[in-house]
Image (cartoon, helix red, strand yellow):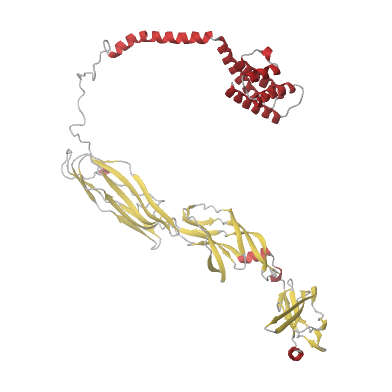
Length: 593
């Protein structure tokens, strides 16, 4: 056993010695690292002297051209990986330049294992001050560089009444986090017809902004139709954003520590230069339609009888400002009765503009037999893609009225000047006024001898026995003096309890009203006089009526409170409790008496 222990000890000594030798044989490294080799005079320089073995007598350079703001500070790192030890020790300084020029960070020295080691010298160029020192960036500075609200306009030079879209995107750098945002100022779109396209959810997408990778969300989408030519301003959208930006500090696990800040960002004011519609080649019937459209006129039927009705529809379909122009007016022959049109709209708005159709539906009723032509009408619009006006003309529609009275003319009825025609009589429209109408009554009823006559005749006789019964009832009630007193006492009890409720908060008035209510209630129930209102008498009478002891004690306690209130202060809470108790006691006694 002793031999085995000696063997293990010898092996351990050999391995330890070889490990020490290997560590001693490792090359010593002593080097300098600079945070930057070119900086502005308003920036800071971090200088690090790092060695892979521990040493003594560290001597820094004189840092000519710089002022030492912090240092020397030390960082020591030591670890074991797969039986191999790793060691690092760093001295670092924070320096501030004192003037512009090119300076040299001279050599530093340190003694390691009895030998002196020197670092290399390095040159640093100090320039004029920079706008934003990169090593002094605050959370707001980081937010400025990492957060952008952008208004993307589909077209900056549209025609009058041509659709453009504005999409507001919030670009966020991957290095920061946005926790909340709220709009501060929504833009007003003066001189634009606007339609918001709701954003139902904020979906995070990846994109680029100014050549850098960002995440972004779409916050707002709106479609605009300029109503005026020239330079039109779109006001900016402003947001208050709560965000978290990383700091130079680390938590226990090495992750960055974030600082929270609020930042106001705006999409920036945009100028839209709206081109007027060309006047050259503009049709006379142009009503302001801009886009790509189809136009047609149709009828629900072409053959019908007189006095029947048909529907004539003037319809425009396509993409463009469908809600912002007038439809052509349908012209009809004078022999057709035409009602005011019913406007129908089936339009949806997307980022490319309005899409769908609008129509006017006319109800037409012919009066005479014949054939009636609905003449062609035209619809003109401006196409911004081809930058030219286009006109579409409908086809002529012939309405054939097969049955009905004939008008003075025969054959087809043409539309005359100003869409007018002479009034034609059908033979049944007008008649002479009759001087002897020979009118007879619709009904010939005689009142005398009728059922109503006899009912009115005997009704007084029927009322006599009813009056006798009612009179006897009133006499009985009037003769019941005791009952009348009870009713009167009940009425007074309700009256005074009501007065007590109204007087809550006024001690004297409340307890006077409450005492009167209790007395009148006893008068009604026990048929006693005021002279018998001794507490002992009341307790005895209630016991005879088999009222339970709790109710009797509650009633007596209320009477005592009414007496004590004359000499003692009572709070409003006590008054409310006494009022509630009175209601409970009267209700309980009603059930027992």
